[in-house]
Structure formats: C-alpha cells, structure tokens
Amino acid sequence: MAASKKSKKKAGTKVQKKAKASRAAGKPSSRASKHAPKAKKAGSKGKPSIKKAEPAKRPSGAKSKKPAASKQAKVDSTKKAQLAKKAQLAKQRERALAQKAKEKQAQQKAEQLARAAAKEKQREKKLAEQERARLKREAAAEKARLVRERDKAQKDALREKERLRKEKEAEKERLRKEKERILREKEREKERLRKEKEREAYRRAREAERERVRTEREAARRALEGRVAQQAKEAQRISGLSRGGSTRVYRPDAIPSQSGTTREGTTTARGVHRPPPVRTPLRPPAPPAAPRPAPPADPETRWATIRQRIDKMPERFRREYSESFDMSWIHHDSALEGVVYTFQELKTAIDANIVIVPDSSLQPVCEEIRRHKQAIEWARDLGTSDSPLTAEVLKKLYLLLHPEEGDLKSVKYRKEIPQHRLYFHEYAAPDKIAVRIRQAFEWLHGPEPPKLKDPVRVAARLHFDLLRTFPFPEDSGKVARLLMNVILMRAGLPPVIIHSTERQRYYDALRGSLPTIVHMVGESMKNSLASIEKVLDEEGLAPTG
Image (cartoon, rainbow, N blue to C red; front, side):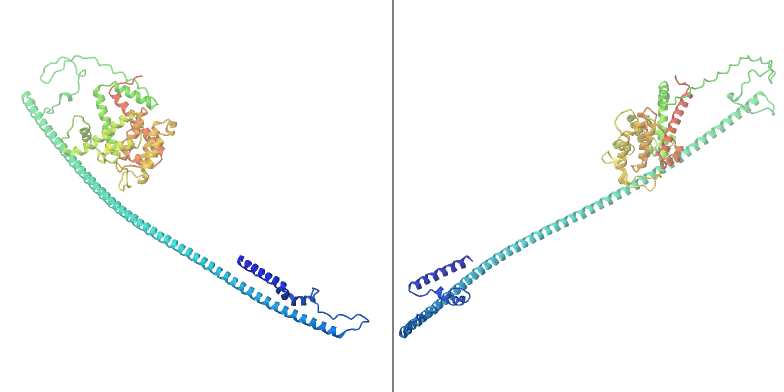
C-alpha cells in the first residue's frame, strides 16, 4: 500500500510538470483539456464553462461593416479550431497519461500481488516448516510414548513374572510347611499312640503286678492259716483237749479286753484257781475339742492366716504338703486338657531324688510332668515380682511347656482352627489372635482393673479372654490358668486349682458369660482354702488368733 501511494504521488508530480510546460508554450494543460468536456457538461449544472464567442453587436444606428465582420469571424473560427485541436491534443495526452498511470498502477498492483504472493508463499513455507516441526515433535513424542509404554510393559511383565515367582515360592513354602505340619501331626499322633501303648503296657504291667502281689498275699495268708492250724492241732494234742473242743485260734490283738468283766476266783478248765485281776480305774473321757473359730471372710486375710499356720508346721509336713499340692495342681490341670496322670507317674516325676526314671516307658510322661512343674515354679516367681504381664510372658509359659517350639522369636500363634478339640466354645480366627491378645493385656494394664477392686474377677476375666482367643494349638488352657494364678498370687491370694470333676461344668462356663467363670473361680478358691484348713486341723495345729 505504501508503494502504490508513492507511485501515485510521482505520477501526479509528472502531470503537474507537463501542465506547466504546456502553459508556458501557450498550450492548454492536459488537466484543463481533460476537464474541458466536463466543464461543458458542468455548464449546464451552473459551473463555469467556456462560452462560445458571440459576434459583436453592432451599435445601434451604426452601419456594419461586412468585411471586418467576416474577418473577425474567420479569426474566431481559426481560434476555435486551434482551441479544439489543443483540447483534443490535451485529451489525448491526458488519456495517454491516464493509460500510463493505469499501466503503472496495474504494474504496481501486479508487483504488490507478487510481493503478497511471495509473502504468502513464504508464510506457507514457514507454516509448512512449522507443521513439519510439529509433526516431527509429535512423532518424537509418539516414539517416546511408545518407548515408555514398551518400558512400562517390560517392567510390568518383570513385576508380573516376579509376582508369579514369589507366589510360586510362597505356594512351595506353604506346601512345605503344610507337609511339615502334617509330618508333625503324624509324629505327634505316633507319639500319642506310643504313649497310649506305653500307658496301656504300664497299666497292664501294674495290673499284673497287683495280681502278683495279691496272689502272693493270698498264698502267704493261706500258708499262715495252715501254720496256725498246724500249731493249734499241736497245742490240742499237747493239752489233751477233747475232740469237741474249739479249734479256732485268735491273734492277741483280736481278743477283746475282758478286764473288769470276770468274776473273782475264776477257775480255769484245768482247775487252777486264778486270782482276780487288778481293776484299774477307767480313764475319764477326753474333753470335747474346742470349736474352731470361723475363718475370716476376707480371702486375703484367710490365706495369710493359713500360711502362718503352715510356717509353724514341721519341715516334713511342709515338704509333703508342697509336693502334694504340686501333684494335685498338675493332675487336675492336665485332666482339664484330657490327659490323666496316675499317682505313680506323678510321684516318680515330682520326686527330686529320682533323676533317671527307672522305667523307660515312664520317661516321656515324666518329662511332660516335669515341664509342667517348671512352668508352675516360674509362675510362682512371677507372682512375687512386679514385672508387667505381656504377650512375651504368655509365649514364655508356652515354651516352658513345649520347648520344641524354639524361642520367643520363633514361636508362632495358632494358624488354623483345630477340628478335634476338647473346648467347644468359639475360637478367634487365626488372623485375629495377635490383636485379641494385645487387647487383653491392654485391658489388664488399663484403668478398669483397679476400679474393680476384685483380683478374682480380674484374673478370671484375663483367663476368660485368653481361652476365648485360644492362641496356641495345644495347652492354651494351661497357659491361661497359669497367668490367672499369677494375678491371684500377686494379689496375696492362693493359686486356684479347678477340680477335674468340674471339667464339664468348666467347659460349659467358657461357652457362657464371664460372671459364670468368675463364680466358678471364686468357688474353687474357697474350696481350696477349706481343704488346706482341714489338713492343718487334722495335724492338730489350731489356728492362732
């Protein structure tokens, strides 16, 4: 646009110069000639126009001179012709200039169009280059995306392969553990069957031994009766008794005392006068025993009194009492788990003088009893300490009963719900055992137990929660009852032994609510205290105070 304006300005300048030159030569300018026709037309519209030379009017009264008029007319016509010719030439020049201007404008327009086309071409080229660059970038981005997707697919494939490998290894490990568990169960079953066979063999041997002893006693009794009969016959023969005399012989301790019942001057069968026996005065009857005072209602005070009475007893009684108490604890606690030990098995295992069991068939049973006694002794030590009760203490008690499980790091909770079991209450799912155990001990160390002010209820609650969880595949009941007794001993109370005759009632209480088991534990404690007081009373030591 700027170039076209400049070209138009130059063309106008050239036209002005030509017009000035023509005026100097006495010719009309091209612009005047160009606008001459328009002036003619414009004359009709009121614009100034070139007027035709009119003949001069003759003055009135003067005579016209014809030659002068014609000459003037010729001059006028000649001027008109010249003017017309000049106008025509001016028009031609104007047309030529206009044509040149048009051609120049056309050329400028063509140049502008060429420049615009070049610019458009350059713009299109630039756009094409931008498009190529964009396509190149998109291709590079697509290639990078494909590379990323390929890398991601490779990584996913590797992860999937690793996951499958881990799953396969986990499945192998699970199968291995399952196989080991089955083998352990088989070993336990074999061990159980072996123990059953050993117990059956021991029972049969014991029965045979009893039968042998009974037979020997019967033979000895018959031999003694034969000897007594022979001696009676010999005595009859020597004393000359008649055939109708009595032949029964009494032992001296079987003959009742006849003192104070015979008459004076009694004559024997042989006619010998026997002097009357000296009468001894009858001993006055022993005064009735003083009634034993009622035991204190508070179990802590009652147990403290019993312990004072036990401390005053001889060493022999205390040793026998402790041994008898441990045997009773092990017997009844194991009977609740379905294992019944005989007195001979318990006596052999508890006796500290027997290090090596003489009967090899009793060796496994004695090992079990000794491990149980070791767990009881450790529970007594815990009852006198202030160390907190935690899940580690629970596992340690279980390891004392089952040392084959390893140590605290290797011992594991139950992994499944056993199909064959003694307890028929609801067990916790294996994945919930750790949470339930943690919650039980958190409750024990929380604010609620001190508010209860009843150690029996607290101990029974912990025992109830642990057995409802049933953390271990075996002996969870023993472990729970040991922890219950630890809490009782820390509160200054005796350990509770639930009698084996209460086994079914105990199982029913576990299937019921907490108050039932609390009542049963309290009742067992009262029975235990009464039993100890009865033993002390039979020994003849009255309670003090």
